[in-house]
Length: 125
Image (cartoon, rainbow, N blue to C red; front, side, top):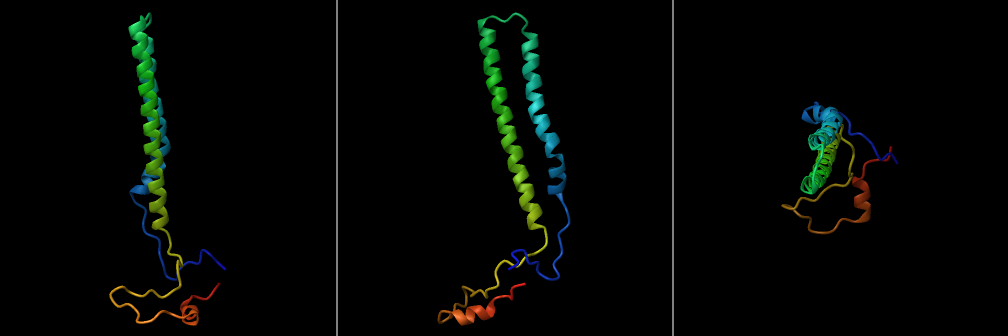
């Protein structure tokens, strides 16, 4: 049985924002990690001889930078998953279910038999 049987005469939708975002995601992820680390390195370089209060502030800044990097990575991952979903949905159409659907505004008076259900299925390729 062919699980990925394409529907005849279906076309792919044109590319849009998802492809442009997908191509820029590695650069966005890299910038999101490097820029906070540069800010942290600058703060460490500017405090050449820190006292206890400045060390505490640098430690808190380090935790904040770590949080910003993790948050940014999770947002990049979320956008990447969204791009993949949109690209899959814009692809060619596939046979999902060969059964005839009973509409809720006109329900059947009786249940369908197994033989009737087999008659509605698409042939296996």
